Image (cartoon, rainbow, N blue to C red; front, side, top):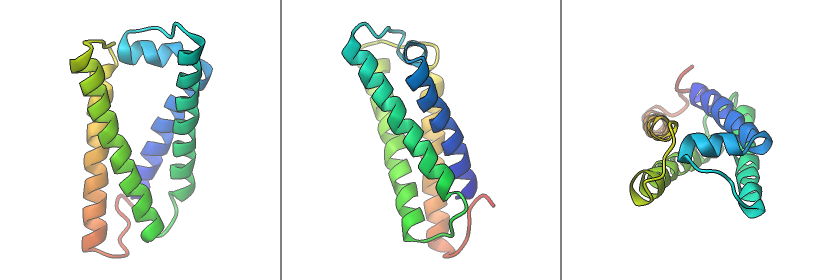
Length: 134
């Protein structure tokens, strides 16, 4: 799980920082749209704060031993990545036909991370005490 947490920490913290500092750039890359209102800009920055927090939690947990808390974190990451895929595909790719060049790479990335979460949880359940990816 260590490698999963490090990769997630770097990706989510980077995305979070970009949403905080230059929110129009990641929104344009993902959705091919602009942030036209102060409310949209504020929501993008709020999402950036949440992603940066997620990255910080994953970074802080990277050296923890397997246990209930670490399993809970990976379950939460699985939910997040699955929800990200569903929302990105349903809302942007299919529903509103609004996508930028980064939409489908983001969908593939979150799909891969979700699969990695499932595999890590499966291995941890089969081998209590094992640290996946170390």
